[in-house]
Length: 295
Image (cartoon, one colour):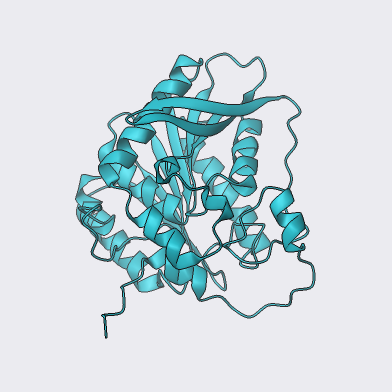
């Protein structure tokens, strides 16, 4: 019998969820029509919807190795030289939740861009419902390529009038891991915010070092936002990361939310926890203001 694969922390957090009632959720056809992924399970009927008033929004085409990478952006209409904030997505592709988060950041005054850096898979991840198939695709992306794609996104936003001297990144789930990784790589990043980003990776040749192993190499301050009931990233791992960063005298902060599972900010999923999500969003704003990304 073949060995059971070791799952990434985010995959564990996604698959080990508490029971819930299906009342208050959209039909699958309605959720798909609204642009939400179906791989994460039922989509809540009362999702947050951010309008485009006062924003310029649209699709981006970003030149990268191997072609043009799709993306989605939102920026304040008429704003001169707005700060750039990268939005690092979950494993589900560039679906409506990530686009809405991008608009929320635009409302805060940022030129927010969500790059679809899994586009080389040739498959629309938002349409995949089989989690093992989905994870196999996203797990094959090398960190080196991820960094190159994020750098290209910054260059694109700068070419469109964004201020690369005020660069931030926020990420969710696998995107939270990307925040930690990019903070250890980038010399131009001013601050990052990781929502329940995994800290310890399973063996994967595409990922040379996990965030925990990169603690001593962090080049930008990172805020980590975690749920104490996350089944994939237990509080003991968060404490270990705190200790590793403190030993290396790196600037970071953490906030953990009692009773919150993995994905507590994802307002389209059963894992959503309103109080934790709203507080975490305020913590994010404070962090970006502290490090001069946001005004």
